[in-house]
Length: 267
Image (tube, rainbow, N blue to C red; front, side, top):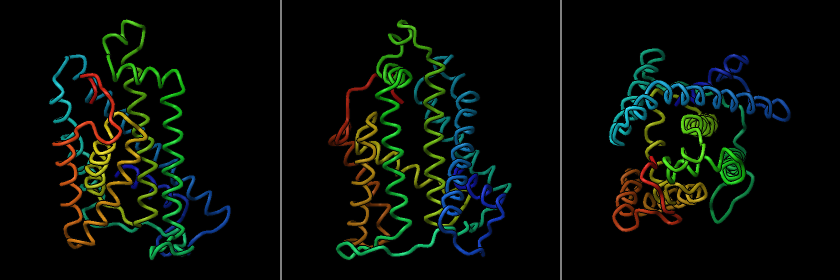
């Protein structure tokens, strides 16, 4: 939600309104880049602020994991109502900067420019995040803290630094997703992040919590299952089908498709 609104504000700051014509060429690239960076900045700053204000005190008091979950729900509702009080509860229009041109048809599916943009961006973000976590010193620290924070601390890993970097990474990627969401759906609303957030959790569980590549696979599988369910049962059952998948996976394979062994500190 913060990523969508930050991107929207960036477009307004550039003088781009809903009634303006679509962009092309270098202008389109510049607009998309600025909007995406604005979404990443806004969401990243919010994520770091939440970690410092809400989660770090819980960690220092050694609060149970349930307290962190309840805090997450509380922060989510707080941010939603804050934006609702400031910008209203109506749907806001997101400027159409990218012409949604059909490129080709694939087994009856219309492949448009905005769909290609979302898929390519998702792959680039996944590759960059995967390389960071698996190929850098900070990435090794993230994996060590996730598996065994006590041992990682004894080995000289700064737990607070690792946690805040993890929150920052989550905020940056969520902000990029928010910018793509705005470009694709062309709407902004105070509660726009709730359903995508729940489905992102479902995709992570389906692919395997703790596995970045698994989260991508889980997202693709969930999208295919959702659309199959909507075709068979009707569009009104789409979300019901998605969350039924979550329950079934947790019952029969809680580690997910590509899950891995995790430490008890994994959130």
